Amino acid sequence: MSTPLLGLPLTPVEASTLRYLTEGYTVAEIARRQGTRAATVHSRAARARRKLGAGSNDHAVQLYAQQQAATSRQAAEQAPLENTVSDPTPLDHADSMIEKAWGRPIAELEKASVRQPVEDPLLRTAMHTRSHLVVVSNAAAVHQERLHALTRPGHVPAFYDLDRITQSASALRTAYAESNTALQAISHVIDARELALKAEGGPDAARVRAATARTSQAPRPLGLPADQPAPPATAASARPVANRL
Image (tube, rainbow, N blue to C red; front, side):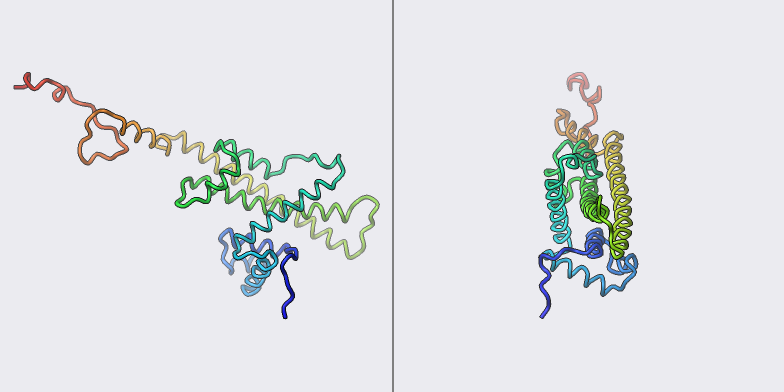
């Protein structure tokens, strides 16, 4: 009889396996990145889903991010008052940039980014990168808390804690690097959106031309595309019929 896994915490390698799968990496690619076999990758993903009670990898990543966010909030509530105020995180910066670019709250943008068919590919790209940033930020918070616990004032780490300190510090450094990379990727997406909106022939410009054509009073020749205005009437066509006879 197998041991129940529901409720057990994910290991860092299980969390990274889920994240790689949701980002579109193949099992073979993940195996090469983790230095293991494809069967091990399948096993890690299955264990992670069972621990979280998820039916899919995407759902498992969502649940894991929620768990880590709840853990971070609980730790912040229990921390001393002087530790409750912290500098903005990369996730805070990302949310601020996305909300400013699209002019809507993150909660609304999350719903808009999953609609089918895709209404705004750049929004979906930004929000997908943000979901990766959420997972990385939560992982960084976990490693920070572990390091604080292992190196707290008055505590002398045991010899077996030294490896944990080294591993957590290395994982935290990697998480910081991934967070900065994700933040830069979101910034590039927003820059691309702004350029597309300003450029001649961008999506907004096309909509304006189409709206102008639809509201035009001039007759439209057959076969003229809907997003092009009708040509102006010529002097000959505007002349009264009697004068032309």
